[in-house]
Amino acid sequence: MPASQTSPPSPTTHLISVVLPCYNEEAVLARTHDRIARALRPVEGVRYEVIYVDDGSADATWNLIRTFTRESPMVRAVRFSRNFGHQAACLGGLKEARGDAVVVIDADLQDPPEIIPEMVARWRQGWHVVSARRTARHGETAFKNLSALAFYRLLGRISDHPVAFDTGDFRLLDREVVDLLTGLTDRELFLRGAVSWAGFPETAIEYQRDPRAAGESKYTLPKMLALSRSAFLTSGSVLPLRLPLWTGTASLAASLAMALTRRGRAGALPLALFGLESLAVGTVGEYLHAVLRQVQGRPAYVISERIRSTIPGAVLASVEEVA
Image (cartoon, helix red, strand yellow):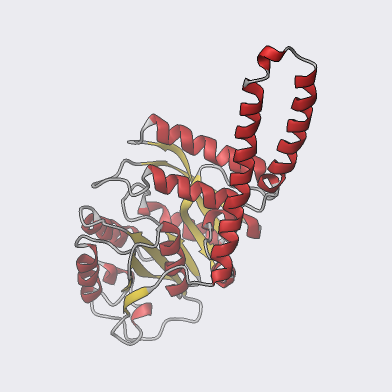
């Protein structure tokens, strides 16, 4: 690994930050680090820094990250006091990043780091947001593929602003977009929804998502449901708030219909209406819970440890120093 660069960069040099949220990734992290180092090949006028965010891992993930920071001044890291969730880890990385543009990519190697240079090239053409759009999801169950398909289509239907289909958090964001996102006061920020809401010029690069290189998916069914709840409650749609009104209207109409039908059908219909009303009240309850979390004013995460670059000017070191 070459020594740190000592001469100052040219004024036209752009710094690109690459943020990797990590949670119990010891089985794959060394390979991830190696592929990131090889993918961030030197490009004229572009330099990189790599930021690992340990989201409260219980395995050796943090020890590996500490090794990476000792080997390279280009690598920085933060460790959360506990597991705050993937979205919080992405947000934490965005706040740590110092680049003119920031790429967020998961550490499990399902998303190929080799397309980062192409994302940077699109950004240099003037795009504020460069998303990676999945055309296939290899190694995932039929349920996961179907639920992902339904999730994005339903979110697009109810949202009051355009939503990019089949894109996760693997994307490049211009500094202007990063500053906007990190300045929002949302306590449970749904990043990909917030990016779409902001409305900056966006393009996409298509790719096929690979199976996990090692370990198991951290997005268990409860976490998928929690992400869906955050997405739908913060999508900007007023549809959930209108559900009680629509349910009440339907109940009145059903009551009128019951008066005109045979008595034998009277038992099932009130029960069905009760279920619909309960669903509507539960939706309102979710909104109230979200409001409670917002007004509590607690931070999205707590950092227990931070490793900064130890060599002056390391953030401008050459890309080979990532390895």
